[in-house]
Length: 109
Image 1 (cartoon, rainbow, N blue to C red):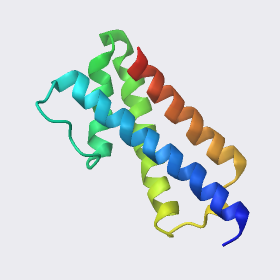
Image 2 (image 1 turned 60 degrees about the vertical axis):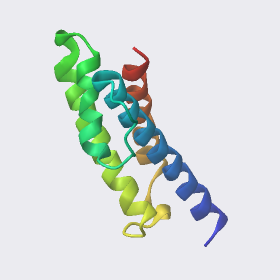
Image 3 (image 1 turned 120 degrees about the vertical axis):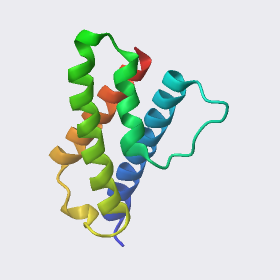
Image 4 (image 1 turned 90 degrees about the vertical axis):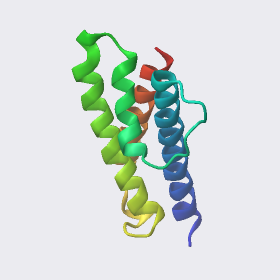
């Protein structure tokens, strides 16, 4: 594997970890569980971000959570070898980074 491929996969892995952390933290803040969940079910857990915002913002945050769900699925494709990391353009990775950053901003409130 080339250095470029390794670098791109590491970028994608970073985005995936950030998504998982954001999803779990949103769930914890909304539900206040006795135990922190594992990062399984991230796609559902991202929707708990909706519970952290005012009703006026909920539709936008729901849309953003769905984008996060898409990014999560695509990162899985890259990390599990269903999509070559080198096939990703810088524009796509930057778009994913923006979505993840926006999700983190919702969490930070």
